[in-house]
Image (cartoon, rainbow, N blue to C red):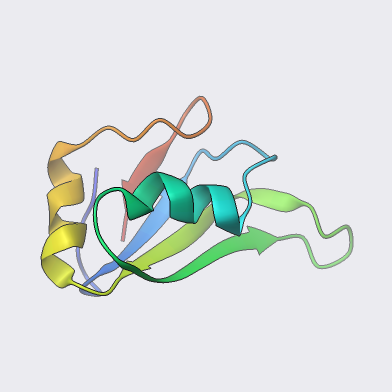
Amino acid sequence: HALLRRPGKLFVGGLSFDTNEDTLAEAFGKYGAIEKVDVIRDRESGNSRGFGFVKFENVEDAKDMYTMDIAIGENLFITN
């Protein structure tokens, strides 16, 4: 689910370790214009840590995530 403490910015967890910024932006870009996408990576290995952030240009688009299930990886959840 999504909680908007920072308007327009969502925490995305449960990502496949193969998920990168492009695939995350592609998945969420269907629901509105994306300002920024970050997949958090391990500093030493450079591998994804399984979570990231998506910032929508329009806060209302991010709020719409409350009612949507986005299929990225097996155990995706979104919050902020």
